[in-house]
Length: 425
Image (tube, rainbow, N blue to C red; front, side, top):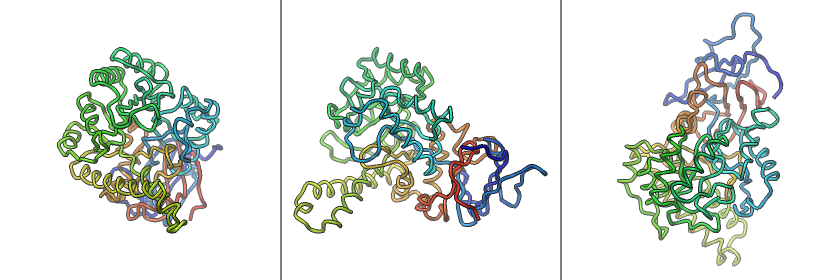
């Protein structure tokens, strides 16, 4: 980012501030240096008399806080490469990939991101590069390496630990190395040596891990594929469940409202990661349209995969509607990089929340205010308020009426600096 004016005035037809339940007409933000100096109606804001000011005016756009993605894997590209094959790459290659994916996400309007697992020290190096301005990317909130059982999901990243004493030591090590929170896979996942639909840790181990993290001032987020491990997380006091589908060990989907109600009472949020499944559905649907009824698709494994993925996505959306009705706080995060979900597509995740019953402003507030609170950065970002860091996004159209407007980015500002800005007016 090059040197820019001390004052900037960003104006738009609509403004979503992350707090109100509807957009403001003709809103504006005045930036001084890296901070927000004032927020209000465009006609009421101006730089101090005589001060040079750079004006960005988007008369048909929507101004909002920069988006916060609470689930990112910057080592990955989202090109379908299996996680074990990605983890076989060298740290140097993974860091270079991370530099690229971080820039892509920032330019799509994600100004803050929570890294949910990277190999060895690659995420720490990425954060240092961004801080030193030798790279561009979102503000990063890091777990470092997920604390996982021996051979568990994402073990190649370097965080294997077993037993109550072992997990406490692993948490302390992550804190020492600079982690901001602790990621723990409480079930297996796509890692080949893991068991996806079985608990990984014992209750005693999970209790010890969570207790140690909280003693050190770190929140805990738990990758979970089972309802029974959601219950384990509630018993341990875990702060956020990641994925959070209500499934049994036989992979059947069984929603248990009493568990959801308990999560709502205890304030445990769920990062639902919805579009990563939908992305594969859309890809397979496109493949079906392209190949027609050719035997290679109709009778091939892709057809069976499509039918299963469609059923699973519909079931997940039904569960999301019930979670919203019960009052569980849902925090959007993409799982970008994994599977077939490349970076730069956070808008798709918010589309899924609107399919689940949120209106566009609720979905945007979830991705800004609620996300900032969930990852402990609300003192810096998440809402348009005086004194906060000037991380802003402008999109074309009325995002308060149509969430798909977020696909059409007009401008991104981070710490008051222009990341990208199309000609205004």
